[in-house]
Amino acid sequence: MSEGEYIQSIQLPPCQSPQQESAWLCQQLREWLDQEYLPEPVNATIAQRAAQVYFRQRLEGENDIGSLVIAIVSEMQAFDFSKSFYSEFAVANAVSDLLLSSLGIDTCCGMG
Image (tube, rainbow, N blue to C red):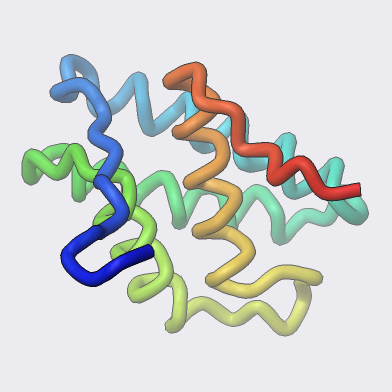
């Protein structure tokens, strides 16, 4: 990347139904968490907390995926991940992948 270039932000469409979007994200994130390692009861709590952050951000008019991810990382830092395989970064990255996939953007890095 040369000087003056930057990574373009990816915007979600303006939110029509934050409650519905949040419920979708909660369900998708819970499924992802359960499939990545082991289904654990704490996964439901993690998914609900991340979806709550997403819901608040979308209510405030946030459409930028990068900003949404940063908000989730920031707010999930206070969450006790001691009973989980995950961290706030893993959760925020999963949310990013789910949102990008919902826009039809392939998140596969092509490695392997």
